[in-house]
Amino acid sequence: MKALLISLTITILLSACNAITDPAPEDPLVPASVMQLVEKSFDNPENVVFTEILENKIWNVELESRAKKYNSVLSPNSIKVSYRLTGTDVPDSLRNLLNTSVIKGGTLSGFKQEEYISFSDFSYEKTYLADYIWKGKPYVLKWGATFRGGPKMVYDLEMSPFKSRFPTADLDDMPELLKQYFQKKGFQFLRATVFMDTDFRKTYQVWLHKTNADFQLLFDQDCNLIAGSDQSVRVDDVRELPENIRSYISSANANKDYGFEAEITGMSRSELDGVKSYVLILHQPKLPDNTDTWYILLDQNAKPLLSYYSCTRY
Image (cartoon, rainbow, N blue to C red; front, side, top):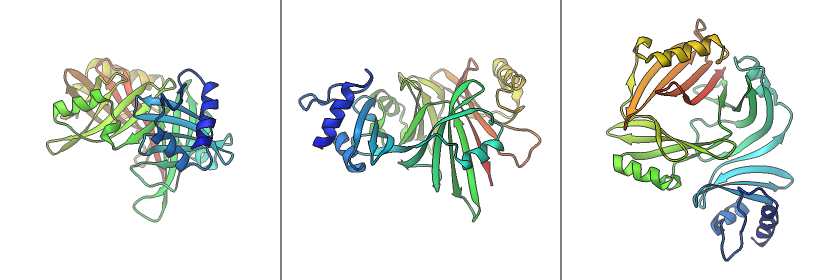
């Protein structure tokens, strides 16, 4: 622990203002339990820099261990996700996936391997991430391989517009305002994904339960509800959507924003506390076996709040 404290102190004195700046024992801004978790999880950690993500709850840590660089998100009790930086060469697995997808042609950088995640929808052999500039906008790619429902390897690729994210199934990781909101509404917390941009501004995607139904809500940096409902309504006819939502799709198709002319294959609308939102599932038409998919969550002004692309290759 002494070695970590010395390394941490030196590094932080040289770091940017948004990092922890005073780890003195008499006024510790980084709890001892967080530093102990780092020392326990990494062999001889050096050049350690902490950045607080959620006040007194969640920290981002960058460090070196055995000549390798790591980036992790952790609470005082557990690591939420941990990545190892892997260099600049484009992995063959990603190159092959991109070449068969509609989002090829962008610029890649910042490769890293996901070495640990607290929970995931699927168990992958290996999972990688990379920064990706596509059509002039920044995204993060995530791809992995798994055996799913049979002996054949399945490859998944996902592109999202956030710089980083971490999952949690611990209600105590949520801001107090959200915890109070869930309690007031009688919602049972299931899990959440916290998305962050380059300035660590957060968007909370939260899965909840009430009256035999699971649903998700989206909250902004200040814990304001911006989308979702406990009673979403399926939309079967695009004419049931507001004109501005239909115009958004038409404009995006005309400008090839999705990489293909999209066909809407799923729609729903939600309203809670006066906040309206719409979910659209888009596929490439005329290709029945194609898995290129866009999931887009829009507010009532047709502003995308959450959008990501995914594809699966067998």
